Image (cartoon, rainbow, N blue to C red; front, side, top):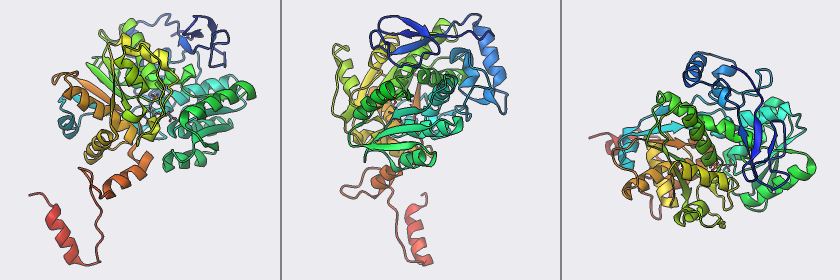
Length: 431
Ligand code: F0G
């Protein structure tokens, strides 16, 4: 298939820019860019066959769950230019215990925690880092609640580009900081929240010539679109009724909307699933705005146990509104207690995820109870990050005593004697 260059289009004023433009905001109006691909000879059947053929690749670029869909991601990138781990190829599976808890029988889980650095961020980062290297970036930067920084650090190390990250001091899970440091990114602990980190990163990128790789960068979204493409592919292009995902800075919500729009336009799917974007109640400006039909752009002072989505001023607001509107989607919020209970259910099913990820399934349960999701509808819930991303929250949950959470599994300290093991076993074995 042809490898024509794509264009960057300002979402606000419609001005168009070269694919190689490195600013992440429109110089004339400040709007965000989105990529417009040519899809010249992209016939539905040819695309499906091409994607399927690449699935056989055991290594190399085609073995990436992002670059397998390259015609819809960044058609002009050549194998030599691509910075890939590889990433993607995440599983889609059912877990009856999780379905039963959520009250939705046809619930499937798409686990993005199976990516190389343990979160979905790798899908966007492979594309943004490829583009950064193609355009000769001297350095790359991001603000992060921890997962983007871990991913950026890993891909920057692979690309050989210096990396700078801005994270809110004291509000990032230790494992994410560990990854970021280990991969060698210069790590700035900012005394402020994520939103302040992002403002600072934006300023730094404008005045210091560092390329910004947050999800305001349109190349990130092109990679993240493949979460949806891959799950549709895994379903033989039979769209589910719903796709549920956690929502923070709204990059993923926007990417999902674009992916569904393009997949529908290309005929890859014949109907569009409804998006359910789920926020944590203490960081839920988008859910509040949804309740007012998006009449106002809302910001809040964020606080939640799900630190990955502890965001009060989401950057991809307008494009996420479009995604919700176009998919007849919904936005809702769930409490920290609901998130932690959903997480304990997902963990105890042998799956596991970090707190922010569990918001998707807590949201499905809540929307089911409210009758928004029907019992017979099919739902794919995306888990965005791995269990080990936030082990502090796991330990806290299971050791909490006042009161003990509903699904706590307290460790038991014993003397090194068989009788004590026997005693424990008696209360543990199945009846
Ligand atoms: N889930 C996890 C595990 C995340 O790390 C994030 C965002 C989200 C969900 C929300 O996605 O921002 O596209 O709406 N993490 C960013 C970060 C902010 O810096 O790692 P979103």
